[in-house]
Image (cartoon, rainbow, N blue to C red; front, side, top):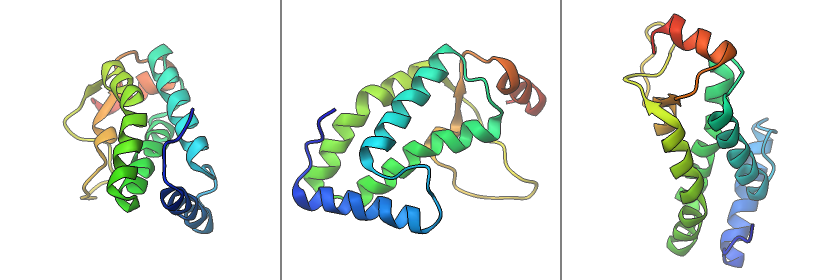
Length: 136
């Protein structure tokens, strides 16, 4: 996939992922990897995500991080990244359903990312068990 970002936005993206790594967030090292992980995740959701719900929400956080990156890009960079994300976001929305509230620890109040308000339509294995147990 070709990324239509200016040199300045490209540098901003590189610095963003370097800062993530410095905070011990090593699962994503650059924009290309984040976009590929997002595409892979959506494909797994479409065919049946098989892990526990905590893994699911950890995985959908890849999109949250891409949103945080958008916040620090130039307006043109944000628009370009939004165009690149749109097809995968549309697939994600088609493959998931809205829930009233994500799982959270007892008494925990927080503004959750929009992706946490969606769970797969096709529920299999451990995720299905978690969703049923949690009545999501």
